[in-house]
Length: 296
Image 1 (cartoon, one colour):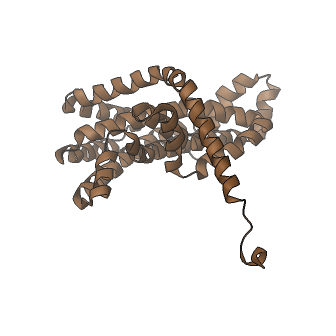
Image 2 (cartoon, rainbow, N blue to C red):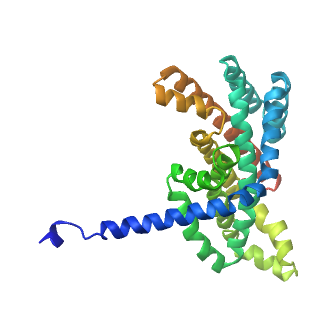
Image 3 (cartoon, rainbow, N blue to C red):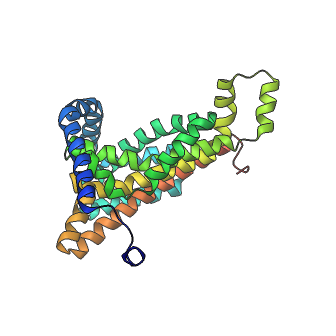
């Protein structure tokens, strides 16, 4: 009757031995190749450290001016620029400027890496049904895996610090840009592709001049989601030593500091609004320049 009342499970000792074998294998791999893997990420570490130094050591007025110029070049909208500057001024006035710059630095580097690798992978998926079949289950796992779980293998391989946190952020935030790049290219009207074929356009010409421009609305949506996910994971990565606004939030949770958590939480929301408004405005402007704003 126990078979009916209790779900059949693997023997406890067998399960324990399997877990120990997997853990031992991963630890052996980490001890053997961990240093070599860490060396591969030295250029990324340099880029991350230098970008953080620039944002934290440069006078706030210069940084604010640079961000304002970037917001204007991206949006060409004074309302967007004004809202960006007001949010950053309020964050700075509440004494969260340095942590905010560290968070922006990590988010910028992580999102740049995710976009750099994600768009080509999305294009490959759009061009090959086989690659799409292989990638879809991988992306499903990446998107459904709890964010904290990403930290475990990274910490075991590389320890605690900025680079392990950056890798976890990139892995967590890359699926949307891959999926939406693939989707955007696949949704391009086939009649347009056939017309290009009739004029003798090569695959590269069709990709650069037709498919990517027409897929831009979807690709920009993927970029926006990737930036938002990178920002949210930066906060979680504070658990393994990533500095920024996430550390005060973590401290507030551990010590029940309500005001500290709320203030830094609102600062994170403010940064998210800044990234969101500028990226959306930039995407809309690109779509209008290609004459496809009304097609989606």
